[in-house]
Structures are given as C-alpha cells and as structure tokens.
Amino acid sequence: MILPALLLILVYSYGPMFGLVIAFQKFIPARGLFDSAWVGWANFEYVLAMPDSLRVLRNTVFIAVMKMVANLVVPITIALLLNEVRKEAFKRSFQTLVYLPHFLSWILLGGILINVLSPSTGIVNQFLGLFGVEPIYFLGDRTWFPFVLVGTDTWKEFGYNTIVYLAAITGINPSLYEAAIVDGANRWKQTLHITLPGMAPIIVLLGVLSLGNVLNAGFDQVFNLYSPQVYETGDIIDTFVYRLGLVDAQYSVATAVGLFKSVVSLVFILVSYVLAYRLANYRIF
Image 1 (cartoon, rainbow, N blue to C red):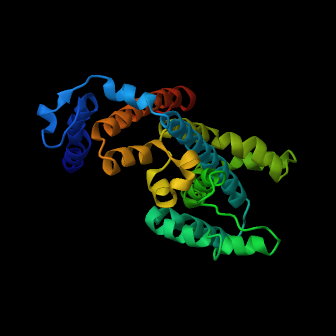
Image 2: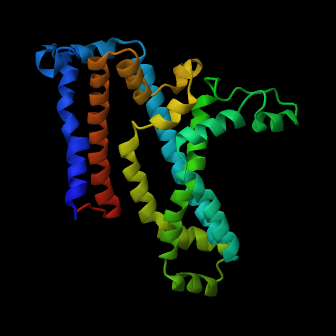
Image 3: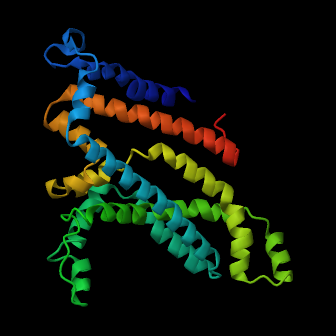
C-alpha cells in the first residue's frame, strides 16, 4: 500500500536532487549536466556578493517569523473563545465558516484581495474613507505589504489551526473543571489554570515544529500579490529564485540560492524535531 506513495517521493522529491550539481557549474542548457563547466563555489560567492541577497534573506525571516507567531496566537485565542460558547449550532457554523478559506488557492484569493484592497474601488479603503482616512495602497506600499501578507495568511489558515487546539481542549479531563468549580474558580481562572496548561503540550509541539518553516514565507501568496514596488520589503527567497532562474535564466545561481535555503531549512527541521522530543515528548518513530 505504501509503494505508490514511495514511488512518487522517489520520482518527484529525490530524483530531481541530481540536478543540484548545477549549483557548482556554469550551466548551459545546450551542453547539459555532464558537459557544463565546473566552477566550484563561484555561484555561492556571486550570490553572497549580490546587493539584494541580505535584503531578501531579511524579508524572508521577518515575514516567516511574523506568520509563525500570528498562526499560534490567533488560533489559540479563537479556540479559547469558542470553548466558552454554549450554543453548539453557532459554534459549528463559525468553525465551518473560518475553515473554508483554508481550501482556497492563493491564485483565487490573490484576485479577491487585489479587488478588496484596491485604493480606488476596494471595500476596505471605502470603509476607511467613512472616517476620513486617505486611501492606502496596501499591495503597493512597501511599509504595509509585509503586514498584509501576515494578516491574509493568518485569516486563511487560522480556522484550520483552531480545530487542532479545540481537539486539544476536548482531551482535557472534565473532572478538573468540576473540581475548580467546587473551589470557586470562575471561567477566567479555569481557562488560566486548566485549559491553557492542558493545551501546553500541543502548543509547544506546533510552535517548535514550525521552526522548520522559518525560511518558507509562502511563495504562492507572495507571487500572486507582490509587484516591483514592494520588492524592498516583500521579496523573499523563493520569489528571488524564481526571477533568477526562470525570468533571468541564471540557472546555476538560482540553484545555488535554492540549495542554500534547503540546507538551512534541513538544519532547522532537525533542531525542531530534537526540541519537540525534549519539550513535548514527540517522536516520528
């Protein structure tokens, strides 16, 4: 039963790794992998000398870390609030509504957000105009753009993450709440001393495992929303590699950047699994 999945991984994940040799070559498509000249670490030195490299790395880390924090804080808060709702019909309806955006692609959401955040016809700027606020070019302003990325990504994913935390809450022993009520604890104290400590293992686990995505700021989202006006604060490693490799045809340099990102991400993933085992007793095998 596992054979089809194993073949897919071998063909699409491990097979293409042979192409990583391009990072150490002056790759010319007409000559192929075997006849292109070897240049050693020259492509990596070239990347490090590029004026945009540090900016792209900084943007990637900033956006990714902001998303990691928001995707922890917001779902936990919503899960705690939903846990206090006593009407099951409302709770189920709300869960369904906030869960739906998770299934939408960024191609579709990108078109929607471009219209919603438009400085001239967008509903957000029209609403702000009611209070005398000047139109804001959310997707064209380098100051606003990173926060738009974080906000829209959180809106898209917090419904899915909320379900995980609600499941953790349902696993807490109800007798603990009964004992707290007998001792006179109100809802706030029950949340503070029972619910949050009961959720702590899954919070720590998901928080630690998210370290593996510290260099993944979301290519699909950024690619569908960014423009040259916001490259200074919105350009990330993945979009940088896309432009180098597919737009400028600098295949060797793009592969070098991609390999650097993969190695750093692998280190973070290994560290995250070690921390997950030590802090939350989580193990793969």
